[in-house]
Image (tube, rainbow, N blue to C red; front, side):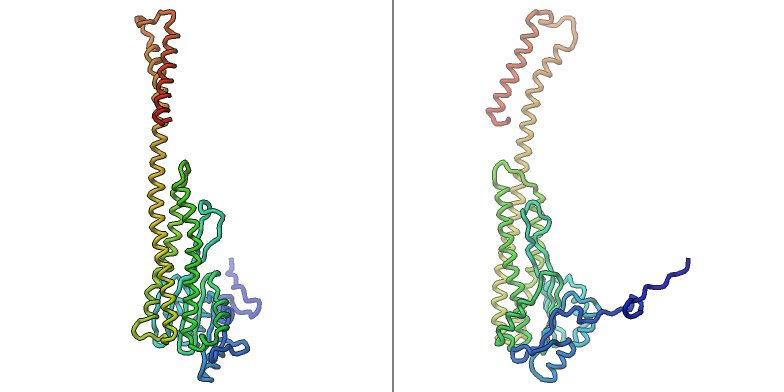
Length: 355
């Protein structure tokens, strides 16, 4: 069978493998800010940077959503980003971190979102995560988002309503995004609290059954939340008081407030983790007690059933010479004895709460 040719592009006639999606397809917003005020009009990212450097004032804020390798390479070439950070921005799945590449600060933030559900005992997911990566230079900020829940439009609108903050430079955007992410952490831990309370009530309510797997599910989600939140402590410390800090003194004060909020979130997550560990132990103990209760109940019924079985077994051995074998009232006596003994055992077990 002859080899078939590759399918050509419907628009250009070029092979599909050579198609290049322009970087603008990944751009959510691109703006130039001078003295804290957004300049009118829409800019391509290269034109925006040219405008800022022509003026010698202001900065560019470029927002991208899940760019591919070609798109991010184009942006990195325009803004002079290091190839390692460009690779990280494309593939994501990074831990929160802060790195310096010449005059560019690279900050990775993990975002979290609470997944609404009817009951903690039936859901399969409680927390979903995403990423925001920020490149902060002398006259630009590039934000790269991964995930559908990590939008920054509200952050941009709030900053544009406070030009005095934007006038502090690109580091003000760095703070605003970090503050937004940490505030979302607070919202998520607040939303998770009722789920933990529901599990706690189920575990400690008498005569209720709960699968330990349900607690393990929530504990797994808390572990995911912890991995997203806790590593951010070190970058925040570097942004507040690290040596050679590029963040202006005016903005560092705001970062200290973000660090305080982050500490509160980390403490609550640690409390949740400890509470769930306790609930696991309590649920296992409750299951063990329930199993012991079931075994006692089974053992009691086995003991009651053993009486007629034993007596019937003795009189079913078919010996010719057995006491009372030919006694006219023997049948009624044996049946009566079986009834009396079994009833006596039943009352005894019931009194001892085995039945």
